Amino acid sequence: MRQAAHSSRSRRPGRRAAIVLNVVAALALAGCGTAGTDSALATSSPGPTGEDRYALPSASGMASIASFVNRHTACREFTSGQKYDASGRNTAWGRAEVRDPSWGIAERAVCEDTFADAIALLAVPNMKTFEAAVREKDGHADFLVGRDFAVVPVNDRTFRDLTGSGLKFLTCDPNFSVPSGFSTRPALAHGCVLSNYAPAG
Image (cartoon, rainbow, N blue to C red; front, side, top):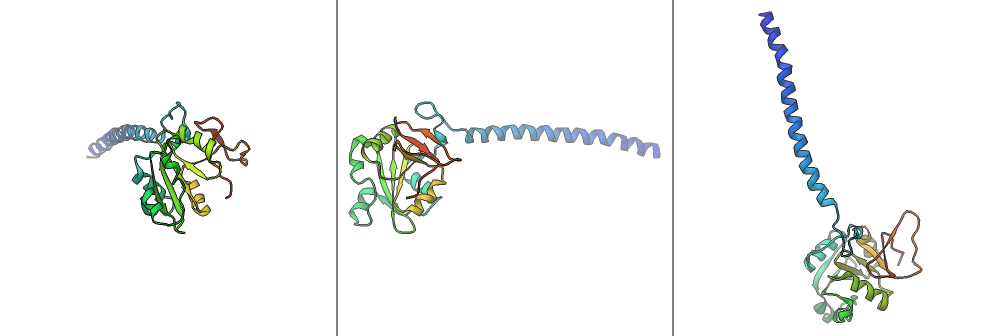
């Protein structure tokens, strides 16, 4: 009996080892699949010129833009730009610009932050056109841009909240510089840059 018991115990580690190896192999295969999925999600698609474009966020439409903004700051009373302008509420950027084809704005909507200040939401399918218009026509507004949309908050606190969202500050100011630890990259339009630093308002 002792021998039988000893023989039985001597075989068990082999079975355990086989089970462990099978489990490890299964986990490794599952892990590879997961890593592949995560890598695909984390890797940004090239921009229109083939560059990384800072892995900028993208939106499928106005509701998607509003949802994105609302994850980082309040975006209340969402409405079309035309309806908002007719309401007589606080001025929102883009009332005239949306009617000017040279800006390349496909659609404009407006929502309000917690301070009842306007946030202009712009669908911009051709970002290079938009950036060129910023350079030529409006060097004063503070634009935060994604891959295919732009956000123009009025309130400085709201602007600060959105700078941590993945949107980048767009400026065409030739004298723009950043403190150490921040960076800039050329935007699509010559003479403009995107930065993860935004100066105080």
